[in-house]
Amino acid sequence: MKTYDEIKRHFGTFGFQWQESVPIVSTNPKLLFNISGGVVFEDTISHGVIPEKTRVVSVQTCLRTDGWEKIGLSGRHHLAFDMLGHFSLYEGKEQEVKEAIIESAWRYLTVCVGISPATLSATVHPQDATSQRIWERLGAKTVSNDGNVTFTPTRNRCGVRTEIVWRNPDTSKSIELWNLVFTEFLGETLFESPLEKIAADSGASIDRIVTAVECCSSDYENTNWKGVIESISERSEVKDRAIMCRLADLGKAAVLLVSQGLRPGNKAADYVLRKLIREAFILCRQISISFDEFVVISGNQWASVDAVQTVFAEEVSKFEKGLERGRKEYTKFVSRRNGRLTESDIKYLTSTFGFPKALIELEESKRNKEAL
Image 1 (spheres, rainbow, N blue to C red):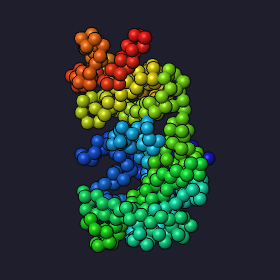
Image 2 (cartoon, one colour):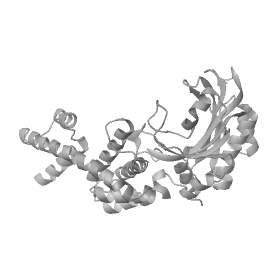
Image 3 (tube, helix red, strand yellow):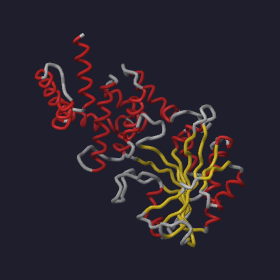
Image 4 (cartoon, rainbow, N blue to C red):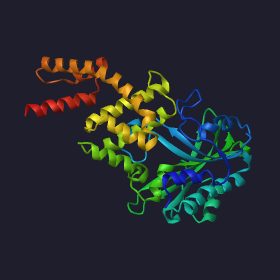
């Protein structure tokens, strides 16, 4: 059974030419971060320029902030993650490229990683006869899906995609494991203006692969996350699973950003880092774990404590000064309202003094307990 690190190391030797991971912060002016392995090749895929390397394999560290509210609640959404990628960049015709990309993904999952083919199936666009034939030859179960379409306005190109789906044999729940996207046509209409040579962007999150290998019901249960979440749980007084998972996720993202040279600030990626550290501090308060202990746990897991400790501590020190002012205003409001805050009071404290609602709720809970 391959571990997270083994999968990460081994994939780079699996076919195609190796492409080093680029920094998380994107050089694309439309993006803050590299959100997938494919965006690294955006110029090539958009404009059809054939690069020096036309068949590429990469393991790209990514960060996505969309779906922020799902972090910790969904077992499949993460802020920072490593994405395996196979890319064919306008170096072949449809049949050749689809065979290379589909067979590589299937062989990697079933032979190299060891996931049972019986737990895998593929979704295919009903008019994508080429992919359908390839899957049938590989012995994979297929499901027709007319939603397997991809169009990116900035590229003015479109195509179909096929997805490998893993079904958990213990729960019968399914997750998309591997996404294979083909850029095949000029414009936004499928099958109308075929390109002479096509591009393919194929990849998967290592977290999801490890979850399938270990047959877990959530990424947070796999060995990549389990240790850090257990360490947080051992040191916290409040055993709230969702908060602990969210805290672990925010910690990973913050540690990776700091380790790549970012520092908390008020603009762009620096602001995201500030937001990550400050929310992590609030979550630590909610489950009664020392923030310093949390930093040690996260630092040891994702980089090194020495690389992040000072940055985290300095940011929290600034945050606490602002919180102290908010706490004083909160106390005044409580006294003025005879202990009964209204929703408008809470909104005012949050928007005017930056006193987070989660901390107001903690203060309220503490005050109510003292009144008993």
